[in-house]
Image 1 (cartoon, rainbow, N blue to C red):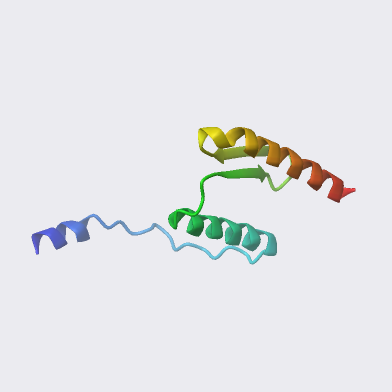
Image 2 (image 1 turned 90 degrees about the vertical axis):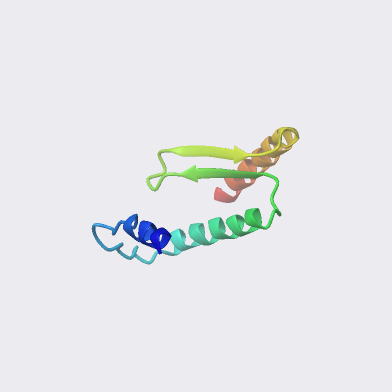
Amino acid sequence: MGEQSREQSSVVAFPRPVEEAPADENVAQIIDLLQEHLRLAREGKLRSIAVVSVSADGAAIGTQWSCAYGDSASLIGKLTVLAHDLMSARR
């Protein structure tokens, strides 16, 4: 009982309720993609991942990756090919 009362006393209520995000197909696609990769990572099915983030106004682009040492050259090559494909698709 002492253990349970210590756990209950450490619970902190949010100052305000979490608001629902507006429904947006682009945001939903991003969340679905991230959730799928989280599931694969939890199942141990991923070895490497790369993420390219573009800000809503398109002004900022960031890249992040997590990979084994030997994967980095291959990952860079695949990202280069992907970038060229995306640029070609825009035309």
